[in-house]
Image (cartoon, rainbow, N blue to C red; front, side, top):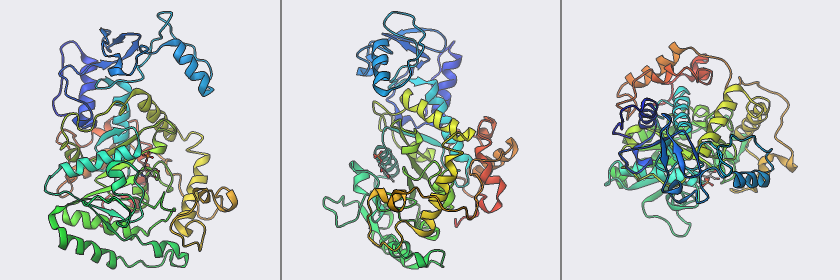
Length: 467
Ligand SMILES: Cc1ncc(COP(=O)(O)O)c(C=O)c1O
């Protein structure tokens, strides 16, 4: 948010408002000069971090019609889920004291923390320097839609989108429009599709062989000749997920990115499926040595809690005005708590991240190297095949051991160096946030271990990519 809303005697709330203004775009909420910060809620009341009690005449903006945190509802809910009964702090016979389940147009501590930590984490990874602000969404397709809105809002004369053929970005709205190919019915005239190297992916004998990107480059240039400055954004997946688990050569994705940088298109990477370890690194942009302007995360982000996010350049997200990316569920406390728990677990190498990690990494390695269902050239395969032949999990006898993507540690100095490099490289990030000073990410100190990859392996240092 642009305008810093401060109120006297609200030190904690003002801090939360400042952080949310830095790590989230203003579009995520409708304008309100109060912008309440909520520490806890029960029944019809909210309390601010300063202990001020507020009456909620809106029922969480038409959501909590039973009041905030009703005990019997929570007991039923947990029983349906099979969760163990909680011990609740009970201020009244009917309601307990906790964060509200919805905080539409208000701010909660978990939201601030989730936005800050996610943005700082992404920026600390190789290739993540432009990922400055978090635009929350309730599903992957919604996050794609918001990311495309932001890219298109940059310049209303640049209304055209390039998408790679056979991708899957969701079924609704613009996410549906960039999914598939031009022969599907109901195409959006703003979308142009370009070739995906299906043949190279399907023929496993070509794996690891030199890849010639020139036909793809020519195709892109032909589009530019035809539409020039009308082209605004290019969206692609790191690998075709819904389209059959086809992993393109790195050079293909880098060619797309290079074209975007040459012609000032937004490079939008859809990692809804590929994030959180599925390609071997924490994020797929690391695996493919990419530096997206916007990355879209989902699925594993909440480990089951429905949450997604577009994370990208602050200047792009800043093109959307108040309310243009807001909705009932985005950044609600439940989702933010889910994200924080996911980040915590990856940070500490919890069961999924540590013991399960190698399984995922080997699976991902095998998929990238051999594709799935070797020799099967059909463009779409049943999802079950992703588990391996005859339903066996993809466990190969250990070949090349990869470094644990989340292992190691890095000090404040090197994180600060990264942030500074981002800020001061030629032209900076194509849209550095004016209010995001270099090195701030480093100062939080909570993400050092995540940042290891960028400093322990010089090949993975920023700036070694094609850009
Ligand atoms: C790469 C990719 N993008 C977007 C989506 C859409 O996400 P959602 O189903 O949460 O809308 C999916 C879903 O499978 C996906 O795999």
